[in-house]
Image (cartoon, rainbow, N blue to C red; front, side, top):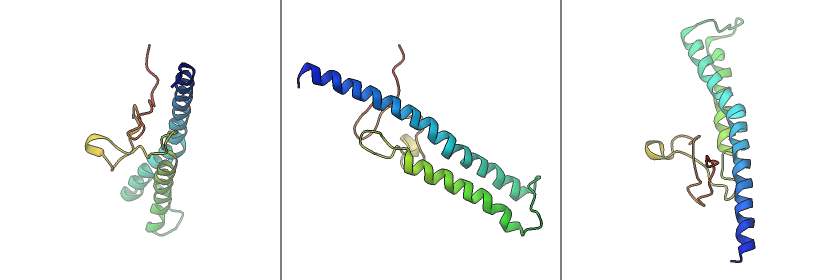
Amino acid sequence: MAKGDDSKTQTSDARLTWDFIRLRRRVLWIGGAPFLLGIVLFFMGVYGVGLPSFGLPWSSTLTLPGVLVGWGLTYTYAKYRCPRCGAILIGAGVFKGAAFDLSVEECPECELPLKVAKA
């Protein structure tokens, strides 16, 4: 590989890393916030703590939290992927395959660095 090609690859990797940082932020707001709100509303509905039912049956007070949790998980699963190879970034260690790894440092498939090294 020529020296010029190596610098292009490093530049491309740096751009992909910054794209992933923006993607992570977007996933946390559009997927993570509704998920957490859904969990809070679920427990408010179960324990009857101030969640207005507007005369609807008890089961319908759990519909909105279910939709929010489903939206959060679906959006995160669909979008939280490596920008280079498209691998899903799910879990490491104990949570391998069971939870999203929101602090991932590199892609487990192509080893693209997904965090900016601190100087």
